[in-house]
Length: 64
Image 1: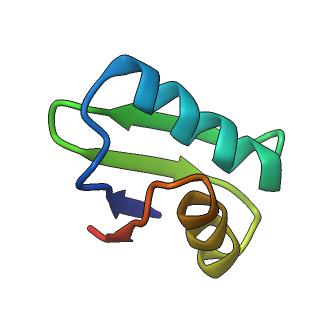
Image 2: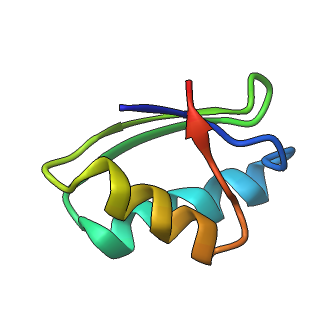
Image 3: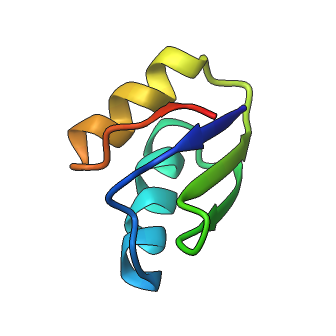
């Protein structure tokens, strides 16, 4: 799954986004790119649960 996160602007943001995803699925593979403001996630968790975790962490995401 792939998300666009408008307010992910730096490496610190990317780490926070990764931690948010891993809070739902510790085994998830996360590729967060602040330059393109996208995050690609390989996970067995649902898109909704990942999206909710990102929003709860302050990084609301839209499908990319």
